[in-house]
Image 1 (cartoon, rainbow, N blue to C red):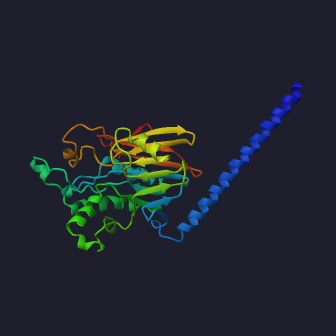
Image 2 (cartoon, helix red, strand yellow; image 1 turned 180 degrees about the vertical axis):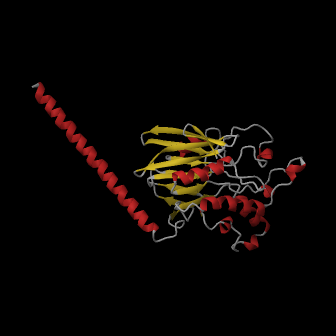
Image 3 (cartoon, rainbow, N blue to C red; image 1 turned 90 degrees about the vertical axis):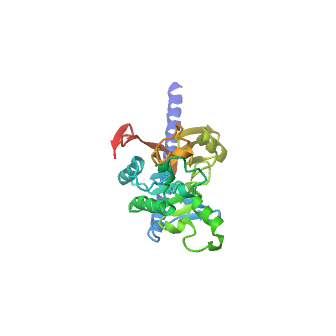
Length: 315
């Protein structure tokens, strides 16, 4: 009798193993088919124009392909200073890891000279860079990403600092609306403009990348709770992740830090020269078999190196 029970149990386990193996094989088959379809589409379009748009063009929709996506946020590119450690690291690691998309997640442009913030009482702070100088610096830095020929999509999610460009023009010269150059996106044709980038499935397993949503100290957690799916944001210049588990499974709230040096002269007046809990660096999003498999952070240090996978790398 004991042998019969063991035999039935062994048969049940074997049947279960086969069912799970068959289900896994079917998922792999479907995913391979999706990849083949996306790759076929890529051959028919320019690499930065293969995308789907939704919600009146405000969203860029990207597939969750095997590989990774770099999210570089809050660059605040500053003319006259060398590229920051975090920026150099993002370009260097991109050449190694070959992300299939790079998302500039808002505030690549600071707009210091059209800011509502005071210039400050020190002479050097009154010499804020012009809009033209900032845009030229951003163009030079963003071109380093554009030159990575393995990157299929380059997306620029608009940030509140980026919006200063059009907001100022709309107030000062509304008659010029629609003229080439009036919109910030006109000056960076290599990048897909959006308010948000949606990656993968349209459900709890999908990932949303946008400049900002909820605020406060626990923005990452609050974003994931409120959105009902994994969300990556910038804006607050912090870099951390909070996993959340409920009946829908696990999702992540992630903040992407800042590519800028946290001691950038532009920030002195925003912070009133106070200490701030900011982190310089960027986040890498990993995907496998159509699913988001987690974030990976790269932290920039003041000595010109970055922390990456337990090592200090000079860049």
